[in-house]
Length: 234
Ligand SMILES: Nc1ncnc2c1ncn2[C@@H]1O[C@H](COP(=O)(O)OP(=O)(O)OP(=O)(O)O)[C@@H](O)[C@H]1O
Ligand SMILES: [Mg+2]
Figure 1 (cartoon, rainbow, N blue to C red):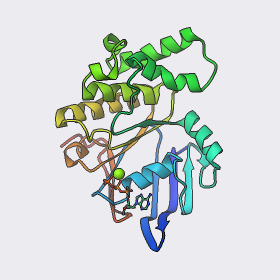
Figure 2: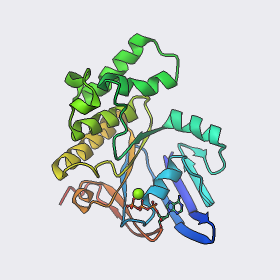
Figure 3: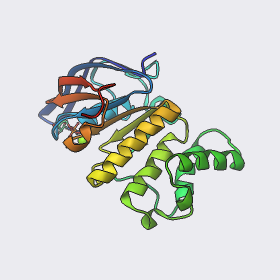
Figure 4: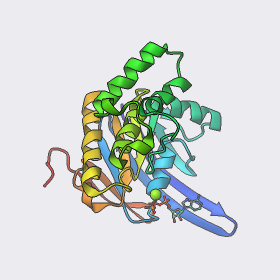
């Protein structure tokens, strides 16, 4: 089963007399455990598309299935529940909670969901911290670690509830190139280890070569689709 299926998807923003056709009839399918990026210039519609997939903002027209569910007409409450159960988010500015430790930041989404015991949460959090190489920093606060390390913690937090789909809007925008590429490699590793699907946006051409599948947006439409899978990084 595909993780995301979009058909004739459109998003129109209307404010006063101004109408913006931000997404204009795009169609795509994203398969499980794939590693996908939307690329394109500023204003081309990347965030709009990710926000629709993440059930943060509904489409204007068309159909959109995420994890087998038609999400076009979900109520706000249904959308919030669906997000909690199915989708992890990695934000551009990391969005870590400053007063919580690294451990507590990763644990946080688990407090919202099932009634897990403290011990079970602890094991799960350390599994993820281990996977992103941050076990040694578990007791530090976000202001005591580097930008790349913050992003690692954000990736661990996005994965801790076992979300099968992780969305990241410009996850590397605030990182230098080397750190950005390391985060991309880390997300690929997580994909391999947990079979998570990663979908992110970037307008950074330097990291595009490390992505397997790219959809290029221009004025709300796809101008090209590229599948680098198996083709290496050349
Ligand atoms: N809430 C909104 N209300 C009205 N117009 C919006 C809104 N959000 C985005 N837009 C418009 O929709 C278009 C697509 O915006 P979007 O944020 O999706 O672009 P983007 O590709 O993410 O750009 P960037 O690379 O700068 O983040 C733009 O013309 C933008 O001005
Ligand atoms: Mg954007």
